[in-house]
Amino acid sequence: MPEVPVFLLASERSGSNLIRVIMDQHSAFCAPSPPHLLRTFMPLLSQYGPAGVETNQRRLAADICNILNRQLGEWKADITPKLILQNAGRPTFAGLFSAAYALEAAARSKKRCFIKDNGCIPFALETHACFPDAKFVYLVRDARDTVVSWLRSSSHPGGVRRAAQMWKNEQQQALRVYSILHQTGRIHLLHYEDLITEPEAVLKDLCEFLDVTFEPELLQFHQGEEAKAGAAKLEDWKNLDQPILSGNFGKYRSALTLRKRRLVESITGIEMRQLGYVLDFPLARHRDALDLLEKSLRACKVLLMLATQGRRGLQEIQTRRRRLQQMQATAAGLAGHENTWVRPRALNQSATDKHP
Image 1 (cartoon, rainbow, N blue to C red):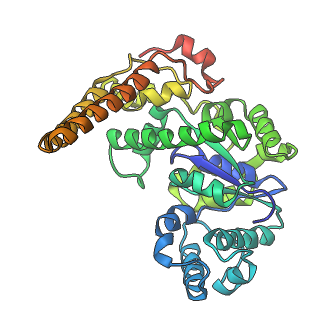
Image 2 (cartoon, rainbow, N blue to C red; image 1 turned 180 degrees about the vertical axis):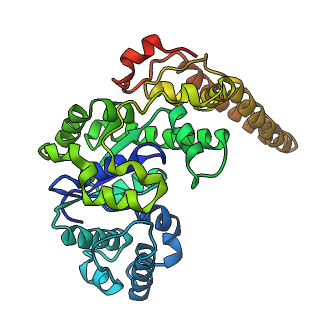
């Protein structure tokens, strides 16, 4: 991997391609279209067998090339399995992955890679283990606006509930990563709303985090080759060759009915508050009650089984009960704890005049 790589953690429809084409304009960064290598291969690595076996390396390199040749966007480098193997510093997936991106960066005369890979959030800590010097940018967008964008996209099937649940699941995972890496200085939280309303200030902060100098060309991303190519290729990327849409937030108020807005907040409310977003309705708790009921039913099955095992079984029941009580007390104790990480600056003013 050329110098320190940067991995983007973001849900789909959250501005991930916007920040990608912006960073591609920087003289230091190569930010190619995403082939989603992490999402594809991380769950499959064990099926390739020991990484040190040459036949396994060749198979993995060939499969990586097959994915690269069938992605939605285009890379400049002509990458072959032989080139990947020749440039891999380590006989591992991380080594082959690094070689592929290094070849693309060299083809663009860039030193570093800004890597977007949809669905990579669950593998962020494994990625950190593979690339301990890497930095992470955590980009988040208001769940309600993300749902609206999801519904308007022809490539994202499913309704409001599915989109909201996807957002919730990914923010839970991303917040876990953020809480672990926050003190290491290797992760930077970025709100989409701040990016589009204060682009220069936000990008200066981002560049400082990435140890590079801010370049005014970043604000002219829509004139770049990567932005124009993406806008011409896919419907979902059609706005990439346009300047930043500074008013592109809070659209959910007119796009979603009150019932749908309540539904989204009932699913995502806990994570939204952690990320500094203001809810339009009181946080619903009925989902927690349903989860507790399901867990209780499972626990009853365990207790019935243990109760048939005599004294030892009863002792285990008591141990399990005390453990469960402590776990519940720990969770309950956090109910009133202030756990907001960073509030979007763009919403400080809009929150005062919002309405359901």
